[in-house]
Image 1 (cartoon, rainbow over the protein chains, first blue to last red):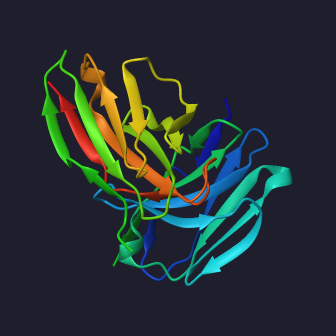
Image 2: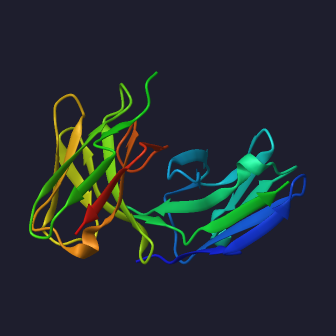
Length: 107
Length: 113
């Protein structure tokens, strides 16, 4: 199956700092999504982004499908941004989550 | 619009028993997918249902099964529970099949003793 690797695995930021999370995948995919899992386990859909760039408030994402990677940008981080960020990709008949980036934002 | 709901939220079972988990998708969504999350294996795809038919299946033993009803609600069943089945089970719904934009429920945390 496809390998989906995220970096960095762990990230600690001061409130107000910016960060870039990366997702690399090993083969062509049909689509790519970014999720945020809060400390209570709830997965929140951030972006559905098979290619191109999208922005939503302080968050933006870029997927370069031909080079098999996606980036999630978080600007002016807040303590509520803490949690685990997952990218996930689908092929024709399978869905794969990445390894996750655990983000801690300290006040 | 109400979100995805899952019941029960917490469950404790004994090895060898079976368990049924339920998922109600967002109104109008016809695709329901199930996932297992464990500390060791991370998030893994179990199966996808669309229009009452299983469309795709992950790499799990036959003890894991599911179904989808005409109102798009879905159930997942695990028979002959093992300690390793302890996990957070998440379901997600989307408008179309094939993992369009997915919206997740809060999950069912299953503990097998």
